[in-house]
Image (cartoon, rainbow, N blue to C red):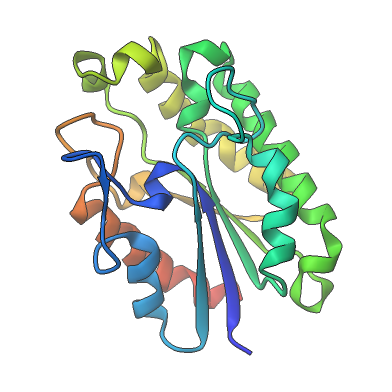
Length: 213
């Protein structure tokens, strides 16, 4: 059997394309590029949902809490050799009213539930990679998304780079910071990957993953 890698994230894992509110193709989004780079021994399972949070229930849209969905997600893709979690961008929305520290604690809850889903793991051994999303750029405040995201998102998003490594170490999981390879977002909403960002992230993860599976 191929090695199963579950990519659990939000719109940047889904492949949202800001230019037309569409979706990047299978030749463009990072999950599919990762599949091509890793080769035939790996099965990449795309679990990207626009708006998804670590653990917070959205008062406007239902079903967006990662905590509520992680169990059926992992069980449906078992046996899981690696779970990649890239979440936190949506948690910065003003309507949630939480700090970067609280977002990190939400990630901790999500990791704990994933680890506790013992029947999903290949060889009964949890294997998780936390990826800090590229920080939202300050320019988002001058775009249409500011109306729903609210204030303070860029600052909280950037603070995740400090908080997520602490959680990863505490929970004994692998860690990677997307900011180290994704240098900028698109110039439309400043919070979604462009083609170059998808390529950069896929390339970096394709180099890292064989060392942790």
